[in-house]
Image (cartoon, rainbow, N blue to C red; front, side, top):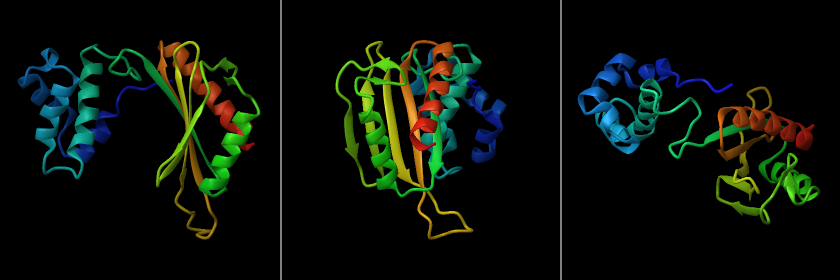
Length: 191
């Protein structure tokens, strides 16, 4: 289930109560402003209060849009929804990514029973490795693998964080169905 923005966390991080943040946004034009304009107003209000005011400002703009009914929880600016699932595994990043690619390669043309619209793409950055694909229905799927912090009890043991996401999902019910599918996919890959 997609939940509304955690306004208490936003208030703790910025030192401003949620109603104070709403008042700042409303004073600047509130519902007449688009997402980017709301975020710019919030970033100015958060400057000097947090290390990354732009990131928190995006959250404030999103929360305000949810409050005024412009956006549902989980809804993106383009009107679509997204779903994610993640799992931390006892493998290093390279081994976890190899397992993802091998598993998905064993099921060409589809992911979680959904047909692909073209071949998948893989890429790597210094921090993450990615497997991406577009689906016939228009959704986009991404699996990302990054190194995870070691456990205090076993600092030498490698761990990886594997995140699966679906974007361009048409509605909240489809997003919830994708969340279930993504969890099942991670369970299939990593047992």
